[in-house]
Length: 379
Image (cartoon, rainbow, N blue to C red):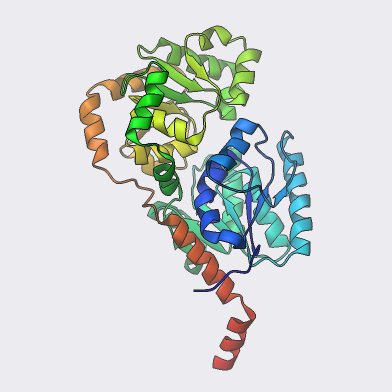
């Protein structure tokens, strides 16, 4: 097994989902990881709490790129990463998903000739209105190693002409993250009891995407549907959503919901594991529901995770479709949960991080001077 030099793999992250999904990779890399936090998520509840919860040390480098419009944010990230890569000796830059941090990491590495490893490659919504779609498509075509979570992701990449020798079918690291962070059943039940909740007796909802928060009409429609449900609705409130609700004068609707500040991963997973139905516009929750075996209403026009739609989730537009879909899920709830419990997650098992790190080691070995000399001698 190739030993990776200390600090030789730059791992670029900047948002809560990246922390969640890259934590298993960083742990496997050990002292080979040089972690860069771009600051894209700068709220303590959205960033610092997750670094601590996943047992990650203080990042080796922080870039203060949060709070800016997309173009300036990318510019600040690119500048900071370029300075780092120009002065270092890195065997790879690892990025994850489809954030601005992801694209900045790939662009900066490519410009400096450092190989790019893209974790969670090959997702496609085919919706160009989504900034995330721009980020992931560009990153995939810059990457040297594309770690695809599902066979469908591999198919997407091959259809776009990505060479097969760059693609690795790894599964998704989210499976390990969920299983490692989910509290024991007794602890979960205590969390519910402290909130006056009972298993299968409430809805858990998260809304944060710009398509739902930047439109007062869409946000009003979503909150109105949630407030009209017959079950209690717990809403961990994203800072963007809270600000949007205040601007739109929707605080009276929030008064009819069980609003909480953003939750840590373990607490959120504990609540999600016993919710009758999940309602969310999050990409990560689409994956997590397949591990937790809970039905999900996805409040979006499109999704880059069709694998979840087969059995676990359904798309719904803002408005009455949300309420109707929740009611459909609640009808025959016990039988539905029993069926979901029998289904494997389409996003793989808990060994994805091992496969990702094996791919990084293979890349480092392939690009090493000794390997190049061996090829020359063989030739």
